[in-house]
Length: 584
Image 1 (cartoon, rainbow, N blue to C red):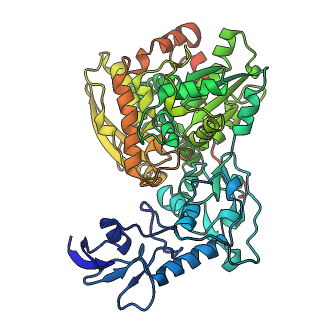
Image 2 (image 1 turned 90 degrees about the vertical axis):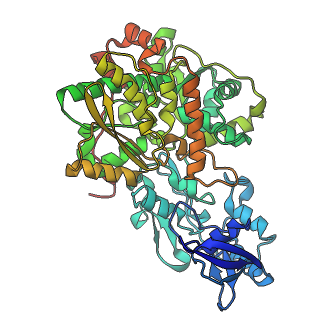
Image 3 (image 1 turned 30 degrees about the vertical axis):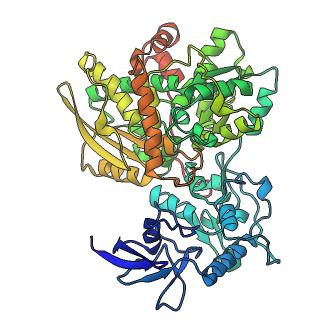
C-alpha cells in the first residue's frame, strides 16, 4: 500500500493512502470526537461532530468520511472547530429529552460523554422538541425515538451485519424517525430480537425489555422458590461491569452474587448445553447414517431461529429440533427437578441469566410452556441487567469469594463452556459425535478448524472413515451466504452452526457496553471473551458432554435413551414459518 506524508496539528505523519483523516490522527494519538462513526459499519458522515480544518479547503471536512492525500495539512483543534463542534452537540441535545439522571444509559452514554468533552454546560436553544411514544410491543427490544440522534448505526447494523433491513429512516426534517417500515410496531415487523441495535446505539433509543422488577418481586415472594441459571457467555463478560479486564472468567463470583441477591438455587445453563449436545449428536449421527435432512443446522440462538422462520422457512426440516440449553434446563426445572424436590412447578420461578435479548422472546414462545401456558422460563435477565441488580444490592462483586453451582443441574463439561463463542456448539457436537461414530475416545478434543470464525468458516474434518463437511457462521449476513449455497447445491455440508450475533453469544445483544478503547462488534473484545471460555474448558476434568456423570444419571433416572420418546417429549421443540403480523 502506498503511503503519503501529511501534517496533523503541525506533526508530520506517514500514513497509508487509503486511510481517513480520523484514522491518521489516531496513529499519532489524537482522538477526534465522533458519534455516528463505528469501525465495523459503513461510513455515514451524518453527525458532523468529527469535523476538521484542512488547509486550502474552504469548509470543514468530516474526518471519518474523507481520506488523506499527499501534503494534506490538518487542524483537529482550533477555536473555530471547537465552537462548531459545540454548536452541533448543543443542537443535538436541545432536541433530546432532559432525563439523564433517570435514563438507563446514564454514565454510559456516548452523547453524554461527548457533551462533557466538548464543554457543553447549558441548553441554549429552547423550543419545540420531537415527541414520540415509547414503542414497547416487542418481547425483547424497546424503541424510544425521542432519544434517537439519527446516527443510523442501528439501521446499518441491522442491514450490513444482520441482513434483516428491519429499520430505516422515515420522513424528513423535524419529523425524521428511525423505525420499521410504515412505523409498524416492532412486534409486527421482521425484527429477530437480536439486540444488535441496542449494542451500537450511542444513547438509549434502543434498550432491552427489562425483567428486573419481575425478578425483584419473585425474590421478595416467600411462596416462590426462585432459581437462576447462567449461560456460558455470562462468565466471560460479567466482570466487565465491575471494571475487570475483558476476558476475566467470573464463574464463582457470579454464583455467590446470585445467592446474595436471594436466589434459592443457582444452576448452570451449561448442564443444558451438555444435554443439548447429547441429543443433537444423536440426531446428527442418525441423520448421517440415514442420509436424510442434511445438513443438520445447529444453534442455540433464538435470533437465528426467528430469522429462519421469516426468511428461510424451507430450511426448518434441516434445523435441529433440540431446544436451546436455556429452554432445556428450564423445562427440567419444572418437570424433573420439581418432581424430585416435591415442588409445584408453578411455585418455581425460573430466571435465565443470558447474554441475549432474544432469549426474552424465546421464553414467551408458546411451545416452550407447560400445558396450561405457564412458561418454563419465567424471566430472562441480560448480562447488563444482572450487573445492575448486583450493584443496586450493594454487592462488592470483585471481592466476593467463589461459590459453587447447585447439583445435579449445576455440573457441566468443558464442551458446554465453549457454547458461548462462535464455533463452540460445533466443536462440542463434534467431540461427542466423533466418539459415537468411531466407538473410540478422542485423543485430541480440540477441533481448532472451527475456531476463530470471524464471520464465516468452512472445513472438512476427518472422523474415522468419513470426511465431514462443516461450516460456522455468525452474523446473519454470513448465515445467508451459507444457506444460499445449500439451497443452490453448490456444496454438500453435513452440519452447520449458525449464530445470529457477531462472535456468537459472547457478542450478544445483552452483553455489557464495552469499556473505553473498545467498540461493540469489536473483534478484539470478543476474542478475549472467547479465550476465557476456552481456558475454562481446558481446566475441566470432563470435556465431553456425554461423559458428564450427572447427564448419564439423568438419562438413567428420568429421560431414558438419548433421542427416545421421553427425551424427545421433554427436550425437543418445533418451529413454524412466520411473516410480519402486518402482512396479510
